[in-house]
Length: 466
Image 1: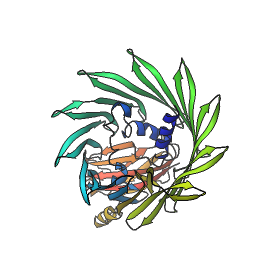
Image 2: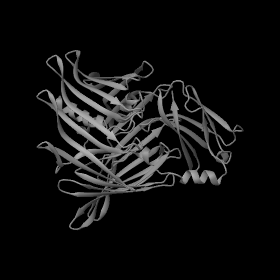
Image 3: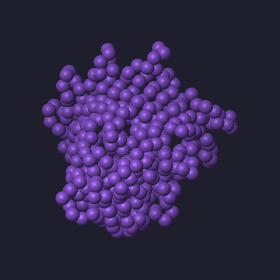
Image 4: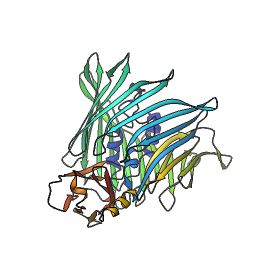
C-alpha cells in the first residue's frame, strides 16, 4: 500500500494551482474530466491521455492573471535520451498537434504525434495518438468526448487501433449536480462485444463544498464493492487542507494515508506532508515544499523524507528564467550539498501562479511566447472593451459586452484556477441587452477567470469571488 501512497503523493504535488477551497474540486477533475489518470493505468498502459505530451491545454488557450502563454517547444534530457516536443495551435490558442521527437545518431527522429480537435467553445472533442514506424504515422489510440450545454464533459471513449480498425476500450460517463459539481464517474470496459462495469466513483459535497468525499468502487461478482474512500477538508481561514485516504477491508474503513497541505493566497501548494498509517498512528513519510518568484513563476521545489525523527533533503528542482525560456534542473542531496542529478524526476512549471506543464527529466528547456496584448489590441481597434463588475464580488458578476462582439454568437465561461469550467452562459446575437450576469452565490471564494468568446475573438478577465 505504501507504493500506492507514493504514487498518489507524486500526483498530488503535480496538481495545477488551486483556487482557495477548490483543491477537492480539482481532485474530481484530475481523476475524471481531464483524464490524466484514466481508471486503472495498469489495466490499459497504452491509454494515458495527454501523458505523452505534457501540457495544460487550458493554460494554452486561456489568459491567466492577465497573461496569455503559448508553448512553442521543449527539450528534455533523460538518462539515456534527449527528447523534443513541438506544439502548434489554432487562432484561439487551442493545441492542434503535439510532436515528440528523439535525438538519435545526431538527428531528430519522429517518435509520436498527437492531434486534437475542438468545438467552438474550446472543449476538446477528440485526441488521436500516432507512432512513427517505418517512415509512416501509425494509429495507436484515440479519445472522443461529448459535453452538455454547460460545457461539462459527459462521456470519454478511448479506442485502440488494432488490425486496421478502431476497437472500443473504455467508456467513461460523468454526471453533475445543478451547480456543475461532479456526482459520479462511471467506467466500463469493452469485453467480448459488450460494455462491462469495472469502476466508479461517487462524490459528495458538503459545508459549502469545503468538505468533499469520493467513494471508489470496483465491479466484482455482479455487484459494486467498496475500494477506497477519500475525504478532503479545506479550511479557508488557515488555508490548509487535509486529504484522508481509507481502504475498505473486512467490512470496515481503515486509515491508509494522510496529506496535509498549506496554500498561499493565490491557491498554490506551499507545503505538503504525507503520512502513512502504521500500527495505529500516523508516521511521517514525505515532505514537499515549493517556492515562487514574486511574479508567480516557479523558483524551486524540494522533496524530503523522514529518517531518524527528522526531515532529510532528497530531491530539488530549480528553475531559471529568461525571455521566452525557462530552464529546469533536478538536484539530489549528497554529502550535505545539492549536486546535479543523473536521474529523472517530475518537474512542474508555474507561470503567474498558474500550472503550465510538467516534464519527467534530468533537466529541460521550455520555450514559450507571451502573446498578452494581442486580444487587447484587437479590442482597442474595435474602440471598446469588455467590463465585468463588481470585482471582487460576492453573489453576481455583471458583464458589459462591446456590441461589436455581439454580432456573432457569444459564450461566457467562468473557470477556476485549475482550468475547470464551473459556469457558462450562451448569448444570442439577437439579444438587445448590452449586459449579462452570472450568479456566483454557490461558488467558493477565490480567484476565477471569465472568458468571453465570439467567433474567433476571445477575451479573459480575472474575477475575485469573496
